[in-house]
Image (cartoon, rainbow, N blue to C red; front, side):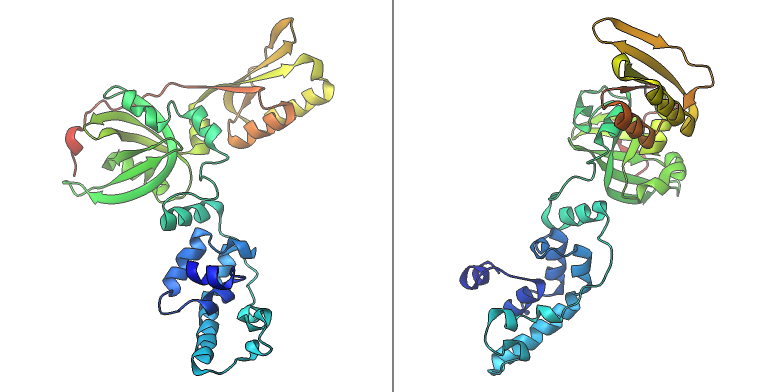
Length: 328
């Protein structure tokens, strides 16, 4: 592939690539992996569209190569120009949506071993760090049996049947700092297994188990990110700059609070630049449902530094130790 490009110039399209490469060496599986890795992003076509026309591109390439071997010229070779010889004009891409971003990133890691165009946690890492008590790489400093909340994506997942015949799982949770094995015993698995097969950020509440190969987590509960925010928020605080807050802004804030009415107390503070702050004591029924949408709308309206959230400390109900991977 590299030699062909160096000798005859850059590839101009998927069809051009297929027509110039020996199809006995670059089969459909190789092409799939190249598309998944983003190797054809230069053609400005969605990866999902490229994947849909692979068979067509390969068939056209075989025809071109047969003509080349037999010394004949195909219709596209008339005139001998590079543009006319390319079969790409025959390929019509279907009008379909691009893969979801998480799927694109998952394919990148599957094919080249790392995320190329972003990270699955981009856009939610601030919320994860708000709920989680530590990045995963910091777990090595936590004591044995300590309760902890961590967040990230499940990167590996393997179900297992315990000695008693119950379903459980061994998973690997990854954030932007590191990864950790999470053991999900039957009781937790029965409640939370529906989260484990999804490509979405999760929060794991559990206890730390230290071993020779590093820390593990014994899962007590597993939550979606929004559910964890709602579950563990103790209080939301909004700090408003007094010199930039008028009647309209207060009405907007009131509407937001009623739109996201819930059970979490909210604290409002007016900040007077250089002259201190004054807490506004809301009525008892002024409570909110903490979630990513509410937080984002508050930040958009009143600035990124106006919001802070106090989280409950991580606690687990069970104190039982599961030494040495019991249940395997």
